[in-house]
Length: 131
Image (cartoon, rainbow, N blue to C red; front, top):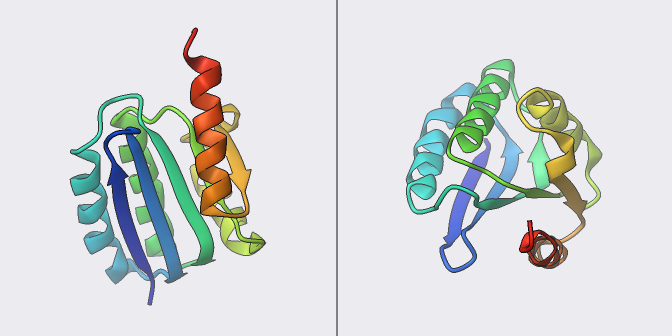
């Protein structure tokens, strides 16, 4: 069974998503509701850290739900993202394949830990302040 946890840091306008386990279609609806609730607390231009270190590629139904979640994040105004891989490549490969048509890879970076991901986004924010 797969699980998703969402956490919002309103001060940084940042969404943290953690995906763990093998996702099935039945896991999708509660995860989508949690994502919608988290997105309501963010302003357009928010950044996202997605922890995929415990994510196992899921069923076709779950894959479609993940893509819809990515599309929702995009429509709500995601700016930049960091994906935490933790060294697991299979979950990352599915995630990239599903969301490749949703997000521009120029706005995505990769990290091996949440701490590294936060540091990447903090630095990225400093670089774009003058834009």
